[in-house]
Length: 173
Image (cartoon, rainbow, N blue to C red; front, side):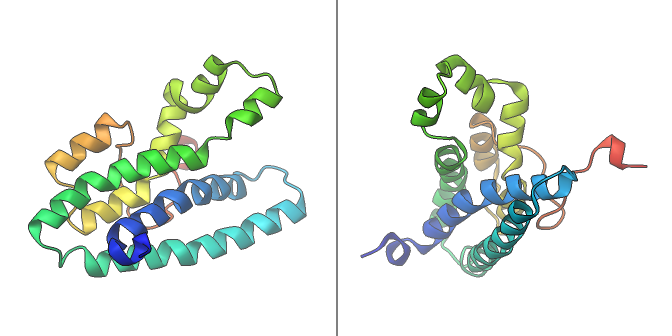
């Protein structure tokens, strides 16, 4: 039987792990005001709209089903959620090794670019700002889970609402 039928809560966490990084990246690009070719901007806008359906469905499914789970299941899910986000998120948000090989990019540059620098670590953690808010809302952000999020380097603030734009001091005026 497919994973979704056997472990639907875990399946929808995996959906979020796959969709949230790409959604986050594309929204940042679209919100940046940078000069992007109109066709690329249009394709990204369509993709963001499609991802919103998948993300919303996953959020709603988890909101409906996780709170009703027995305490042991919720405890397991609270630990599984950050692990799924970390493993699948890295797999999705990192170009394949063939990309780096084709452009003769050293491994240490790849590591620093995606996971080694403070900025790259913060960017990766920011992909899951909405997922952390969801974890809080459905009771999966317990003290042990918080430590797992932190241990994996994907902890941080939660969004106040889904798809909340990042705020910075320069936008506060």
